[in-house]
Image (cartoon, rainbow, N blue to C red; front, side, top):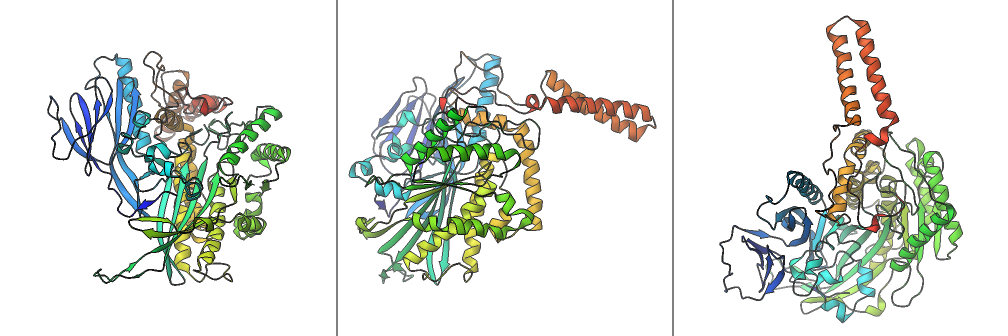
Length: 635
């Protein structure tokens, strides 16, 4: 595990925008980064703080920033992306974690007069797409720790060589959303100016149980492979990457020992010993070739078009990815277990996908891989949420057997180091949970698993004794825990489906409420609109930001704007439906002409019938064809 410095760097910079170059200068420290706006060259200039910046021009603009995101090539040329402002989420293990509040794009070229009118329009569409992604909540970074990797991975793979690498060169690029954007800065000298961003959720809460305090944190990391939105991105691709793949790490930081400091006016304890615990869960779309394209229906029917052999190979590739990442002890090579927990309905439109999933799992026959199917909606029908106890009883032996990662840190100088590395405890099994969207049902079950693992962790640390089977004696802690997990569920849901999660009232208060059902109805209606009429734009924006679609001025799309009504036959049908329903209402309200009202109503029904039958053509579909094969070959 990397050493953690107690005195963390603030990570702020001054950005000077000259007509001929950008200059990025650390607020603390020496050296400045120069980016030529004509040649696009990036150079590091070693200067002292007293040495003035040199340029043949006067700076157009000077501002304080929180670091660079990267450089992206658009139609008019390259754009510099930087973090304009960020807010602290909290401290964990003496490292501060920040959430991006505002990011900005600045073009290298001062004008776009070299572009045609069509090129200018498409370039502006691309700029707006990038702003849309950057304005999405919950991009995070940290200066003092690598939040793209779990504590267990950092511990198992610790080495002096890894410790000496700059942060950008040792992050897990699977979870770093600006990894491609920052490739130009991927060396020791330049990388300190880049903030590696994860997308997902980070929450840190101070908790108290049994008169002992500890920090509880959740870090959810969304994969950059097979990115996308709910109905446009389902299943897995040929490389085994799944849609909506999220790794969630539940962390505990418990300080013990120490002595009172007489030099402090507050007479606080000087902490000299610390325990860290980590428990990882993963979620991801059903690892098969399947689609569920929006078509104006409330729930489109999933489609499985590949052969049984192709589905098996797809699942096998995904499973190999899981085993490579989670399924083997990095130190001993011993296999770790993976529990595949499916919450799909075993009837209706989800049945075929669930049956195919079960079929490939049974065919693979790997002893370390276990499969459990729990029909969430059947067991919990009529709001009978107590039946989740059946699932809890079934998976409890696995939670206990899988364990969790734990290490003991002691302070040496200005650093925390592992006191007894040989006494580390490892998580030896991982639970992969999925429902159809990997959102609502998955959130409920992951929170249930999380609190059981936390109980074992607090028992291990001596915060509670082993006879404790629940946290009912500490209602304030239960409230904090449930809301932390519900916040995580809401954010993960917004990023994939466009709204907060459903069923969060159960996660927050342990039961279904009337307010929760009203909120679910509102979220369901909002999802329907966004999934059908705005998600194509969002899918394009994600592919552009992650460079799955690369801009080629010689091969631009016909159009990059998204609108509900266009100047084509589909747009005419929508306009006709709006006009005919308006005429129907006017005839009813203003005149007594029943035949005219009936005529316009029939016209309205005909238009709506045409739209409904051809729903695939009326939804907002992506317009940008990805150039990256990681989007998948089986869509």
